[in-house]
Length: 496
Image (cartoon, rainbow, N blue to C red; front, side):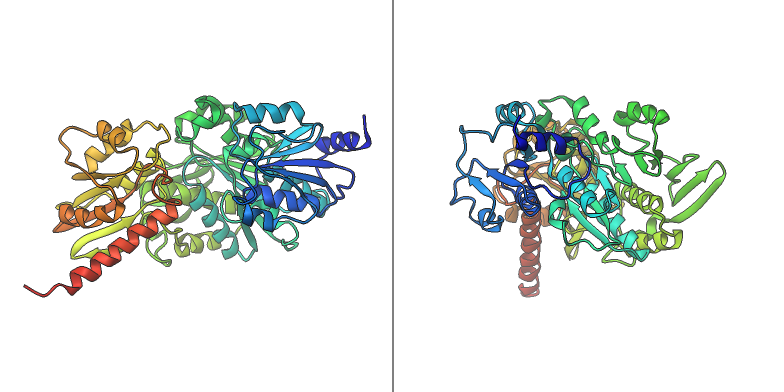
């Protein structure tokens, strides 16, 4: 075995990496996380080869961001998957059942995700321990919970750096973290799949729903198990929060009885003896049977931010974020304050304008049926009002049956667009008026006519946006611009 091969084997077994001289890595996929990992490894002395199927012209910005010492193999479709014996950092876009994944596994000394690389490099920087990590896993609510948890930690006076599946890749934080920073990371199942030593100080599994199971070749159990893998390396002194209402997580909650780390459920269906809960009005932190600490009322969530934060799913997000902050030692008063001062990220049940008695709400971040159901429940119209739902987008072969029932129960009409329009229409009840449009801009004036004189026009698509938009944010921006244009046009009309 060569010196490099010996070095790679030793690194695969090591939990902390400092000097990587004499090691070799193949980074497969030059998205943001691949570039960040390649640069962090190269700057520690590793011999790094970056591989991507795209051509040099298509990778222009990514190539420009790479450290000059990184070797590059572009346009690699059908070509070598990397160097035999390397440590491989694999893009989350490469599915485990794919030919590329199998080819990499046959070559690799070990396969690692970018967040695993961060974990080991950061430990090498900080005494073998690393910065404390707060990790958010699950299907829905990850982004809101991640940002809210960071907000609560800052309200407690600490410095919190946000990254992972949102914002900067974690490897991009290497060298930029202060000594007292807490890393708050949204982590996906794709990233966790190739993790081995990633250990958060506090973590949460928000929920699981049938989204992205194509990545697991339709194996939902494998998807759930990978979401829960966020806690695989947790030990004494660490705390896991897990949704106490999610039936799919019940076997995993039962298995936690023998866990070495502390764990707490959170519930919106009552207040557990230990954990966090909601009684229909107030959020509680329950230390033990009969010992409850109030955290605030649901109606006060976000009242000192941009706008109040509504919906039972946001109560879940608030409980998750509060539990993470409390697990890290945040004072209760700081948590109470932060629950009121937080503002949701854009495109999540965000009011974007009103015309007369009709309000327009941007919930473009609802990219799967489960998230859209939460948006519908949070936007229920008052008595005498109508709700017009705008849905549809690119197809991930999701099941729309439960969403169809909720749309039928809450909405007075549906406006559909995109690849999924026919499939969603088939899931809606026969008596519900259904309208089709080619462009989102056309749905806005139609929604106004259908909701008038009083009601809500809700964009909560239940689908990804890549058939028509660059992403959910672009879709939300187009919706908001169309609403603003309609407000201007209505205001410019001469009075009758």
